[in-house]
Image 1 (cartoon, one colour):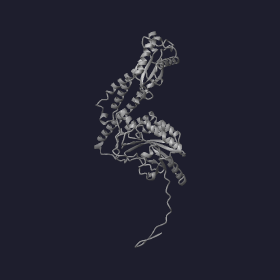
Image 2 (cartoon, helix red, strand yellow):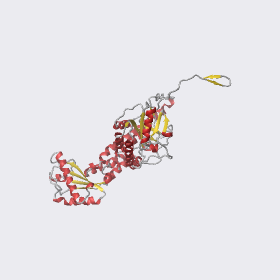
Image 3 (cartoon, helix red, strand yellow):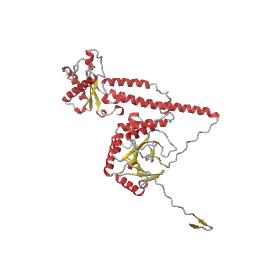
Image 4 (cartoon, rainbow, N blue to C red):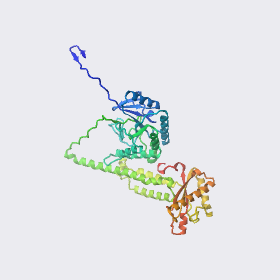
Length: 493
């Protein structure tokens, strides 16, 4: 080929036509895709970034058309799904669960698409870290790898994310905060049925879980939702809001052609006159990291200790008294974590959080009204489940208690002495609780308000060495529980 110019002829050699590489395709779908990802420079619902083609899928028909087009024109291109989940996308967790269920029915009922490996992405503000070198002020935990196409069990996907979140002694304070809040986020998703809804979704659609990612979205959102409201209720903190509408960012994808950067070079040696300042900095850093790590450990241990106290269907009068006593002792130990604690000045101490949680638990347990039949008048004879005539006064008191709290449920706990084997004692305690429940039903107490628990001989209130002590242990207790807390843990109400 020759091009003529004013002075000379330029000869341009003929070259072979270039063949563009096939870009991996990621389909953005789910109940949050259309609302939150429709305005991210996705011209014609498509965006090409980082050697990846992102395609927004709003309707089942869009998915069918996209897949058919890909199969027809680029049959060898790798395709996977990206399923974003925004814990603050709805006002309540119930609305989140309903949106997942509705999306599952909508898509699985109207289009039959082939199996697709899928990555779930959780977006939430988890730390106060400011990342000036990041345009979206975002930190990702987990990875989106197009080369890893083997599906995993949903439980394995969760385990991988939890493992990736685990802090270590080299983590910064922001990383430890992110890990602690991320764990709370996963616990909250479990306890409110969101994880279970996701499991059902992946079990009944061709989407195959491959990985789960967590996005610490530092800019935050323009409004608070279910997750933020839960944080305010339980920790008295609210994530900061963004001053203007900003859309969740897309993660970088690991592709076979991704270049692995070499490790950064070691720092050049500084003059000896600055060694003392480096040593001081390292000592302070080690102290801060060690204390923030201990604070995170303290939070985790607190949640593990408090969980048994929160299971309302396992309570009894004796357990409530013991739990309140234990919590008050814990409050005294927290008093040692006072204003002199260095972490308080950095806003990293868990003392204030634990103190508020402890106070809340004590108040919740103290609000539970109780009534016990332990006393001089026995409700049952030994090895008997028949109500005695002398039990009438106590039974009337139970009816009065039930009528005094018409909007509450009643947990009836049966107990026995230690006469007989454990299996027999459990049977007797259950039948005694049921006998009281049947009597309350005859007094027009709504049966749906009644719950039964058998404690056997495990919780004596007196010695079993005397007839009087065994009589007190053959007792029935009534615990008044708010309706909304009957099937949930007190910790999360």
